[in-house]
Length: 198
Image 1 (cartoon, helix red, strand yellow):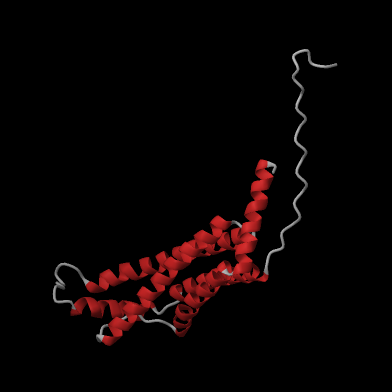
Image 2: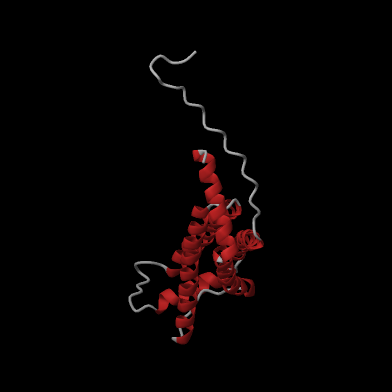
């Protein structure tokens, strides 16, 4: 039956064909593997901090406090301060290690799924991590050059301090090379098509 007013009923838009799965390039896969390794390294780093020789750390802290010209033992006892501060440092380091592990896992999963916001977020986190690593290395080198003391570091901690920034740089390069960018763009376009229907 025709409409007496001349209006025709619109036909529903044809459903968009299901998009073919987008193949993840090896560059993104390697970046994701690197993120899982980074998470593992954050756990190892926390374990190094928790198992450090606390007696040596406390002795170093006491020595450094007593060398300060403004130090007054009648106001604060350096040994008591070290006894309080070192466990807080170790627990804080362990908590920070768990948070870092969570961020590594989150970024690995989301970047593996091709989320461009995750690639940008990983880049920001990586940049901040590199700045922190450079700052730590600069402080250690500066203290050593000026004859100041630095916190004792195990060989494993020293190796991690070098490996971690190199891993971050490799991951960031892998995330931004051309095949990776094409993958992130394709996943983004497919998700937009899914949401809008065209």
